[in-house]
Length: 319
Image (cartoon, rainbow, N blue to C red):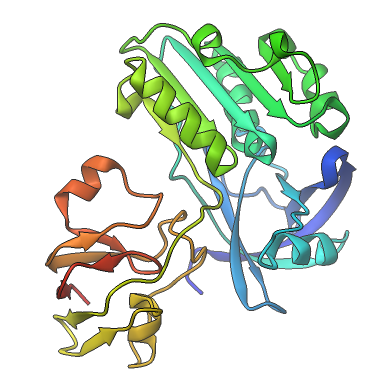
């Protein structure tokens, strides 16, 4: 736990469409919650599972009374979403870290395109609220399997920016589905795109928009989960400060191998999407497996996600 840890109480829970629970969290004493910026998330500790999970804030950044998150009850969950659905009843308390923001909004953009796939719409909602408050030009593309599974729709339809929302449903005609050649504007230095959703959806949006000429630094992304292969050839890791050297086996990770020797690297997502376990690399070639670092950061070869990425030979870490 860190000094950024606090305890928040579930003050309201709304069962929304598509097995999504909208959960509002407030302070125990009724004081204001910490300020956050659009794109931020909370780290929530689930004690029964002894795991941390990250959930994007969908509430208005101008709201000081509560945070709101949306949590999908995912049948393929590793336990996090099921635990939140089970435990996040009104009056329940959770240990929270954050808010943190690895997905910040460029508020000076001339035009902003927000693309949310399923539950990936949550940070987009906070961004839309902020852009609307700033009087900025934007569009929100919200893709789901079916209209009757589209959480937040009632609230979005009643918002002041309802005319800036385009819904795309998998079970309706092709004409209304997301067509990136039609729905994405021409590349411009002042146009920024944001995407969050299932990995396949995100990979498609990112590759298509960058191939169309949008600069990678203008195509912002946040993965909430990722398919990651943790296996590979054995390699050595030397810790420069502690003097310990370990061998990371074919089915082990840097974080787990070091933990066995008493060196703890904080890990939360275990999928290389949250950035919690980023560790400085002093020497060695990295086989990046994460979805957190940008291509430019990867090329620098001085940071590694210790929960999933590996070394091509020996690595020397600054720990």
